[in-house]
Image (tube, rainbow, N blue to C red; front, side):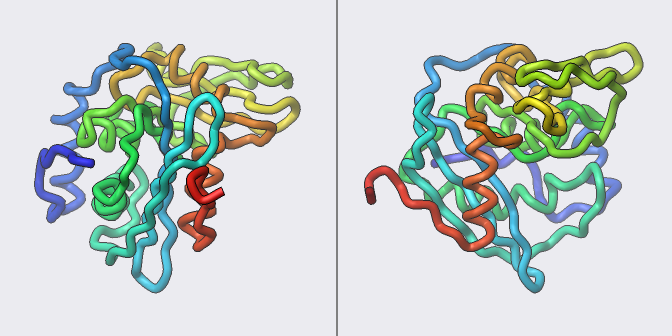
Length: 226
């Protein structure tokens, strides 16, 4: 799988923020995709300064694993909230280039435009891959919201300075919400709907669950191997 080289990764934190401010204008906040047949999840595990970057591709809507890759790469950028893409995307790109199945959509365990500079990990990755991406984060980074109802599918808007930057979604009845936002080439309504379609009785989408397991060393069994 190919990707676009938009900038150097050898940057300072200040330069990284400048890049975010510049690149955020290229994020497309509307549906620009065809039929979704495959959806990928990504995650990063860390082990003694080495990133274990996982990409797991699932069929959609069946959500069966069809492909996966884990790349081991040194970590070259410090942990700084709001700048995680500069730490995590380089190892993830290595894993993406090894895939045999190109995903139609990527769900990222992180923020899209629900970010102080409207350019979180999901938006950055989507722009580089030129793919529709969704940010589905376990914790809130930016914005305010009112708690939605307790039933599965309930949601409220995540607001910053009067603008809707995401939604707080209940993916399972009586569990904590997740924070869904536009990554790239997708609308917020589609991001919410597709995230819910990727949840099978758990708080997190199957994409995230499989990617987390792969980054932890539990390589998923693909449909071709079954």
